[in-house]
Image 1 (cartoon, helix red, strand yellow):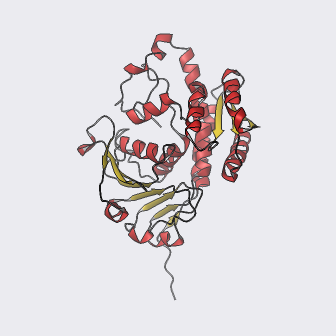
Image 2: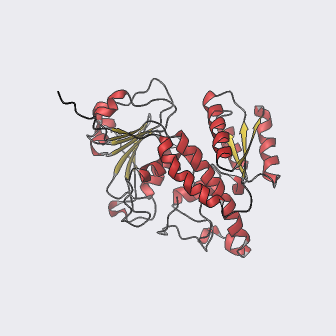
Length: 334
C-alpha cells in the first residue's frame, strides 16, 4: 500500500534564523567592539521573560554583549534615561507590556532614537508609515523597523514570496495578504510595510477589515487605507495567497476551512492561532517567529551602530534634515 506525502511543508523559525545570523556575523566583523544591548524587564509576563532569556542566549552565542536589568514599574523611566546617557550602552529594549496603557507609549518615545533597537520611536514610526527608507540625504543610514514586523518580512523573503526580479518596493506586487491583528505594535505596522512593498493587504481586527494598498498598479508613493464595510474573513480570504496571524488569545482559532488552497500561513502570536487542520489546506506553515525576531533585534542593533558611525563621518547638516529625504527611493528599507 502506498502512502501520500503531506502537501504542507512546516518551516521552523530556527532554520530561517540561521541565514540571518550569518549576515549579522559578517556585519559584526566590520566594527571595533561588540555592541552592548540593555534589556529592561519590569513585568511578570512569562512571554516577556522568555523573550529576555532568548535574547541573552542569542547575544552571547553571537558575540554581542547583553545586560538585563529587572526593575519595578516606577523605575523604568529613570532606567531608560540613565541608559540613554550611558555611552557603554549601544541599544535598549524594553519588554512590554508594563502598564498596558498609553504610559507604555510614553516610555517608547523616551528611548533615545539612536539606541532604539525596536524601531518604536516617533522618527522611525513616521518613516515606516510614510515609506521613507533612510535617515539622511546621502542614504547611508537606514531607518530602523519594528522587530516582529521585520521578522515576518524576512520570513516571507526566505520563503521566496518576495519576487527578487522586481525592484525593491515592488517585490510583493501581485500578492494578496491577510494579516489578522491590527495592534499598533505589530499588526498595523506589518500591514503598512507589506503594502509599501507592493502587496494588497487585508488587515483584520475585531473592529472590522481594512485594505492597505499603494493603489492600482502600485503607483502611489506610500500605502493608503480603505475601510471594507460589511466584510468578514469569508470575503477576503478567497483572494489571499498569504495569511499571517497574531491574535494573543488562547481561545482564538483561525477558521482554516476558509483558507485558499495552497496558501502560505505564518503565526507570530505566542498562542497557536492555527489548528492542526491548517496543514490540510496550506502549502507552507510557519508556526512561530520568535527566533527570527531575536536575530532581527541583533540586526537592528548592528544597524544602529553602523548608522552612528556613518553619521559621524558626514557633515552635521546632512543628518539633521530628514524632511528632505526622498520617500519613494527604490533601494531596500529592510
